[in-house]
Image (tube, rainbow, N blue to C red; front, side, top):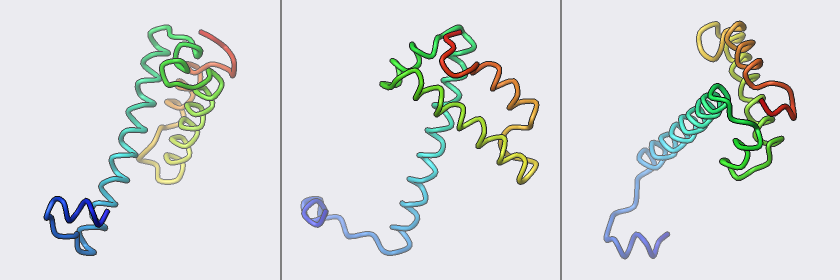
Length: 106
């Protein structure tokens, strides 16, 4: 990294800037993961199989289903903890129905 900074003639970040950049990166990663799961839900709602979703994500149908199912559970737990964020129980139940059982295609 030092070579990159020298090539750009950009001054190094101070501690506050580096921490702000780190926090921004974490926020972007969370938003990207959330968007990915919304896209998975949209694909399921439009009739896509877990095999198709797994292929689009570059993974197996089982891995895609497990990741999505875990996301649903995390969202439900978040709502149980604070009562505001995440998914309320009825929303999580609907998402679970849409996701189907492990290995189901549609």
